[in-house]
Image (cartoon, rainbow, N blue to C red; front, side, top):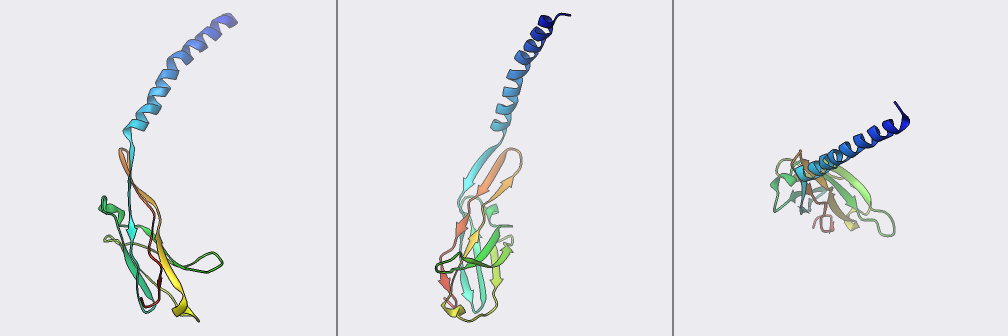
Length: 138
């Protein structure tokens, strides 16, 4: 078999397979879709215990198993993580910090990380959230 025959067979094979590959890629993009849903996180304090809830008005499952980090606001430097926790099924979280000099003058806030939930089909993307900044005992 001559070289030109082999080249034509390869070219025909590519011509047949290229549209199939394009359809497969388009099909997977059509089969799954992402829905962005907003999240909110609250923060309160009782002595050295910070607590709150993660909520989502449009997709209640965004409350459960969310990673929350409590931060100490540092003026003139990077904010310092004081604790990490995962929310329960109702979206509740709680972190107890140890006392240190100046804790009553320090400001704190919490962040809930962005998360994705779902499988093939619809994927819900729970947006990240940041709480208001509070001082101990407020």
